[in-house]
Structure formats: C-alpha cells, structure tokens
Image (cartoon, rainbow, N blue to C red; front, side):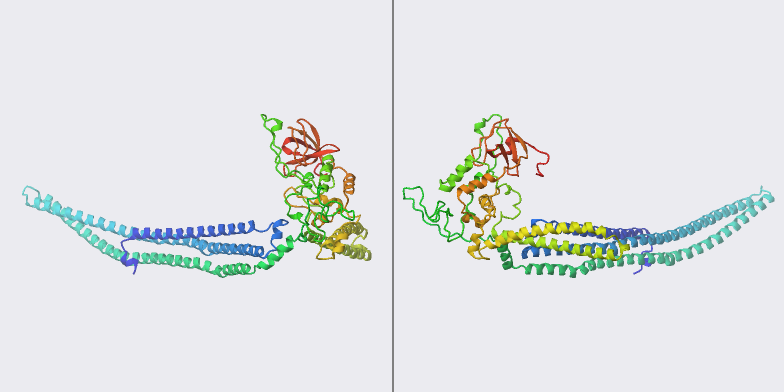
Length: 612
C-alpha cells in the first residue's frame, strides 16, 4: 500500500501524522529517561540502606557480627549493594543504548521530514503556478474572442449603413480582421498552455507527489521499526542483569542456609560465661537460741578457728549474690539508685521535698551491722573511686566476672604482643638501615637513625612492662578459675599480701548505678580479712581530689543511704561530677561527703577538672 497513490490528496494530513509520530518517539524517550532516573534513585536508596545497617567500626556492633545470623545479615547487605550496582548498570545501558540513540535519531528524523515536505510544498507551488498561467491564457482568449465578435458586428453595421463613407467601412473591416487574428493567436496560446498544464499536472500527481509521499512513508516506517527495536533493547537491558541479580539472590540464600544456631549458642556461652559455680545449699540457722543469731559454719561471725567466714557454706564455693537485686552494704558507697528528686518549687517548703523511696531495711547481722555503723560514722571510702559510675571499668578488668575478665586480659595480652612484634620489626629494619649507612656513608647518616632506635627501645620497654603486668593479672585469674586449676590454688591466691584485691572485694561486691553488678565474682565468699583490718585499709586510702566547688540552690535533706544533707546557699567541694544519673558527689569536710541531686546545686568545675 503506497501513500503516493492512495493518499495523493492528503498532504496536510500526512504532515500532521508524521509530526504525531515524532511526538510519540519523544514521549517514549522521556519514558525511558524517567525509568533510568528511577533505577538510579532505587540503586542509591539500596546503597544507602545497605550502608545504614553496616556495622560501625570500633563499635559494639562489630562484636555482634561473630554470630552466624549476623554474618548472614552482613552478607545480605553486601549482596544488596551488588544488587544496587546492577540497577545502576540498567540505568547506564538504557541511557546509552536507548535514550541517547533515540535523541540523535529524532534530530535526524526531523531534518528528513522537513526536507520531504519542503519538496512537496515546492511541487504544489509549481502546479499552482501552471494553473494560474492556464487561467490567464484562458481569460485572454475569452477576451479576444469577445473583442473580435464586437468588431465583426460593428463592421457589418457600418457596411449596411448607406450614409457611412467607404473609407469608414474599410476601416471597420480591417479592425474586425485584426480582432479575429488576435483571437486566433490567443486560442493557439491557450491551447498550448492547456496541454502544458495537463502534462505538469499528470507528472505532479503521478510522479512527483507519489515519490515524495513514498519517501515520507519510508521515513515513517523506519521510525516505527526504530521504536520497536528500542523496546526490545529496553527488555534486553533488563534481561542481561537477571543472571547477576539471580546470583546475588542465590548468595543471600546461601548465607541464610549457613546460619548455625548451635554455633551461635556456643558463642553466647563464651561471651557471657561468668566462671561462677552454682550456689550450694544454705545451712539451717536456728533462731530459737537466746542469742541473736546461731553461730554456724556459714555465718559471718567467728567460726571455731576464730576466723570470719562467708555466710554460705564453704563446701559449695558458690555464691548467691549474683542473683541479689541490690547489695545491702554497698548502697552506702554508691550514688542512690532511684532518680534524684526534682528541685522544689517556690511554694513548697524544704521539708516537703521528696528524697525518693527509702532504702530497704537491713537485717542487723553482726558484720553487716558493723559495716553500717562504720559507714555512718566514717563515709570517707576512697578505695572505690576506681569504679566509676556509668563509665569504663578498671584497667585490670576486675569489674568483670572471672571468665570474661580472663578473655579481656587475653585479648589485651595478644594486642600488646602484636604491638611489641611491630616495634621489633621496625627496630630490625632501622638496624639494617644503619648498617647500610655505616658501610655506605654516601647513602645516609647513620647517626640520624640512632634517635629513632632509642625511641623504639623506650617504646619496647614500655610495651614489655605493660605486657608483663597484664600477663600477671591473667595468670592470677587463670589460677582462680575452677575449670583451669585446682581449688587449693584458687583459694590461696586470694590472701597474698601483695594483692590489693582485699580492699577491692568490698568495692566490687556491689551493683553499678545502671543495675549491673561490677564485682570480681569469685571473691565474696573468700574475703577472710577481719573487720578491724578492713577498717585500716580504708583509712590508708587517700581522699579523692576536689575538681571544683558548688553552691546549694535548695535545701536537701539526705535521708537515703549515700546522700548528704545540704542547706540553701551553702558552698561545698565537688569530688565527682554527674555521670548522667542525676547525682553529684560532694564533700563538706574531711569526714563528711556524699551525693546530692545535680539539680539542687550550681557546679563550678576547675579548668582542668576533666583531665584530672
């Protein structure tokens, strides 16, 4: 079906149709472009999502990824990153193979269409010019015929009139002949023009226009083919990444199948095993005797051999204290566990200010009662300053259970050994460099290496001392773990004079402000130091240094254990700032110190308070 023969008179409609075809092509280009933008945005969102859930370096999250389920999740995040990369590939290929190519083709198509319709308009103008020439020749022929007819009628009229001279008649006759001759010439010209127009018109509608329309038809068909090929490319671009996307999904499935619940359970044991033994049976205490408490092997009073023992049976060597919610003794030594009371309003009297719930009543056991009296009369307990509220634990990790402490110490020893090896490698390299400089002075000055070698020697000595310190603590812990050494060594290691754990035992047998216990777990039942010696240990400790001053904004009556009463406008010394629990530790004089709500005082810290 040819447009040239079938649509010879539809020039304007063809012009509109081809313009519509170009508009369709541009619409498809816009569609593909928006699809590429969607792919890019989707890939970007996938990458951001994967990055968002990636474990942060040097954070607690890194430790969580030792579990197989977390490792599978990490593999899923990595595969999603690759998955996002494939969507970027789809966008890039669609942009290069479809959008860019079609945009270039549209420009060429517009130029070709413009040229064809320009030729069509030119042909139309030519046939219109021929038609005008034919009309002009026709009108001239018609006019000459009318003039000849009038001249003939005038001649006949003059010839019939007897009053007209012969000369006038002859003149009229010559005029009529002239007009007839002009009419004949116009007729001949009109006939010639008509034949020429018919020939041009035949060529126009059977040759020129069909050829032009045929080219326009071919151009339109090429456009249709091109848009069809682009649609195939659109699908093929997606199909090319399907195998890689499938591989990503297969890797996610493989990672999910690699999850080992037994292995994760084992890691939980390794992470949280405390090394404690389960508590043994509690001995029966007979309160029917006239004395306050029966002296038994498990009481805190003196045993038969005159030494104080643990309340629990020594044969169990276990402890019940990890399961006690709050230690009765250590509540005196730490900031109150309840949140601090809000500042009093202007209308409320100081006596109406709530100081929080009262601490639970303590049983007046012999040793605990002595501790209460001791703490009431002498609150200056400084051996616990290493246990910071809400902060990190001591250097020897004594705030951790034995098994966890052993693991932390082992990690620290391994880290120090790696640092030592690194320093030794650098020392060996510098030594070799120095030897080369000595043999070949032109390569460098050997004396310039000595300073660095001396610095490395100092670093090595520090690292070795540090490693020896942690190895000593590690050996001490491993000597106390029941699963690793005999019980005799476990007990004997507790009472060596050089161990400072005697004082720390009381400090560590407590709850931290956030509710977790921070004790060396295996020490409570083994504290066998008499109370007077315990008292002396506290006296030997130096007081905490002051880090600033504070002014009491309101009156606070310290009715809870560990708190201190202050009066409005009173100035005191700050020895420990608020660690986030709402309490500040202050000192009035050498023998009076405790905690007050941070909102009740205005604190003025010294310049280098945090560094100190």
